[in-house]
Image (cartoon, rainbow, N blue to C red):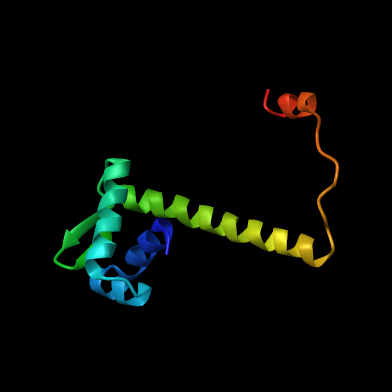
Length: 105
């Protein structure tokens, strides 16, 4: 399970132990993942009351963005599978060095 999935599961259940059980990971591993994410973002994502948690204002904003990103990833995977299903194969031709360099300018 990736960090986004862990975060969204905790947000959904609002309970550390229940979320850990649903994800089939230990409670300390889940808490560590959330703590690492909060450290990375330098904001508290949850307000804690024992093992119960609620999204902070930062967590609410972040969850909206994470949910949107997860939807986009699912959509992208679905599109790639459709391309393969309908027989799309990448071109055998490679771009020249000049063409590749123009893509990134």
